[in-house]
Image 1 (cartoon, rainbow, N blue to C red):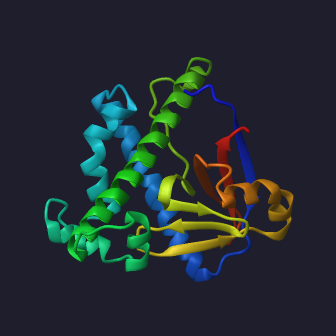
Image 2 (image 1 turned 90 degrees about the horizontal axis):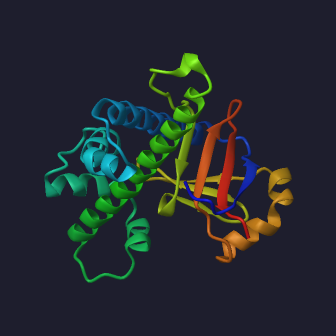
Length: 226
């Protein structure tokens, strides 16, 4: 674990519309299912490190939870089907300038998305396993059990999430960019650091979305302490 001090910026969303709730809930549940699948498989196969877990589970998690069994991960047109969920403006922004043709761009975007998503899942699973092992040394009843990642939580990084002064934007498995505005109180409380993040002066590490009471989300932003 890193010894670099971190800061957690805690915010709350406004109440989300029903359509947004449905999209976000699907992504929260899929992420938790993917993380618990990773945890169980890491224990079952005795994978010793996050790198080993990623190498062993990347294709499996990608096919089960990113592609959701809709496409054949080994086929080029499968990548096109997944990438085709996303507006081309999003793909171009993430890939950047490229002389590749549209088919190649869709394939590259799909690979990048899958890598980022699976990397976040494996990191979350590894952190949960480490936390469980520490607690099990003190709490006898926890020993010889497999930890369980809580439903309704998603922890992402990289281009899957963007933070500005108005809120968070989540890039979803269905190809949507979902804006999640901060409520006025938490936004005003953290406006200085949100402005630093939006301007690029502060870099976020990971963002944790947690289902709150009906229609709300807790949004916890992790970044290095200045």
